[in-house]
Picture 1 (cartoon, rainbow, N blue to C red):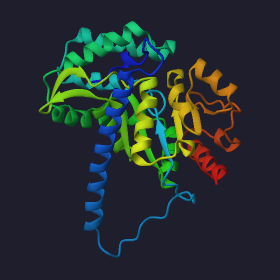
Picture 2 (picture 1 turned 120 degrees about the vertical axis):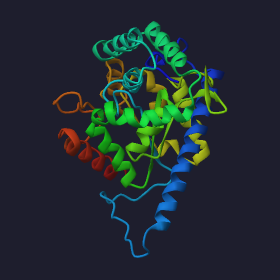
Picture 3 (picture 1 turned 180 degrees about the horizontal axis):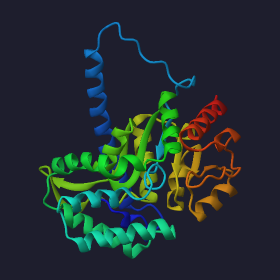
Picture 4 (picture 1 turned 90 degrees about the vertical axis):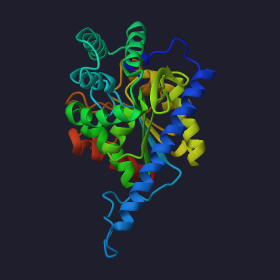
Length: 318
């Protein structure tokens, strides 16, 4: 089980545990994606033979070797997925009020200070693992579906969602890449119609959580390792892929692809993006995007603005 508290590692370079976490996340993501594809194929076979496929919204030629990778917290979703998940578990009496208070403090720090405190992160990680230890994976997945509807669905950034949809409409695969639990990330990805999710993998034996992780939290260098492993397994060309994030901690992942985007960036990522002429978009305010390679049409707010940015993005690629 992942936690917001894991997001600032003490070592910046990729370690053996980072590689293990990345490979485990990639394996879990591919498994869930294959299951989703199988279900979609079964549904398609059941449709009447005369059913016509819908025309893609954007006339962009698909690139099977390109994909898009989106960070989750504050990039796709306002706030931290783990905090919202924690609220749902508290409502179902998985833990006491003092633990919810701790989750709330960590969320407030994240949103107001814009930084990730290592001690808060470690504490949240340990709390989350202890909460799920002994519970069945299937139980948490079922509860996660309910929690998404209760606390997460209305916190999706419309602009970022439109960018992801543009990749899908272009025939590209779209993956979430997050330190949140892979089960939670997979639910969110499926609800948004994305290909799948790379997330922190909590160890389970016979379908029951042990309270331990496989490797380490999927954060920083581990995210880059997960994307690298998935790209190799899926035959992707990273130079033709895009990645989106709000945090400087994801610079390793953003630097891995040919089309990095800073979305709702923190101060360090904004500075880094400007220095390297990366594209940038901020959905947190009404101000237009800074000129970091994003087309002027993307200055429109909310869903329409995000869609315009995505269309311009793909047209420039052609």
